[in-house]
Image (cartoon, rainbow, N blue to C red; front, side, top):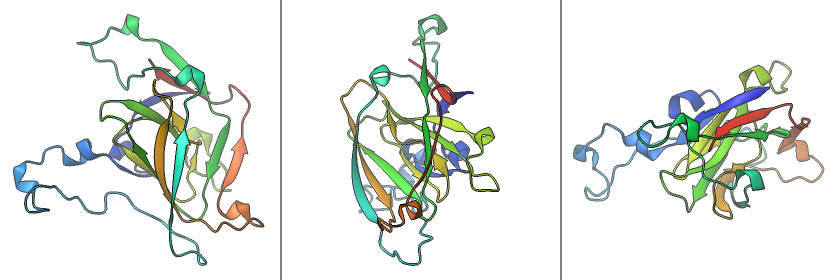
Length: 207
């Protein structure tokens, strides 16, 4: 099956978790919204929900991921075709195969990218809801291209692909917030994975 990637936005991602998308969140606000830090900042509260379903774990961990793009993804991608800048004939289609989906049954997981610009298409997220048995419901699969200033929070129990970095730079760093049991005898409490054959699930990207 082929899934077209679409630009990340608050509404379309909402059933899979939540995002921090500054430009979208402050759109329509003016200088009257600058009420924080002696009038030099806009503060928007509770923009992304953190979930903890563990009974044994109270504090979340900040982890660091340095993620490297696959060779065929180390190029400049576009989130949408803009007629004034590019023609459809100049757009190249790139397929990326999803070989693993995973979920964190008891915690949300937030990925906060560091070091990319607000216009840079920097990473790809692929998500799916769980079916009645808790397995991935592939009919709900969606893929989103994300800018360098957008953070993603996967809801607890939401199936998603491991982080997929896009773009020409060598790597992309993420701060990752998650509650973890870290019990070597019960790894399934922190992460459950399902594997797929090459080509079973492909995301369609534009470069």
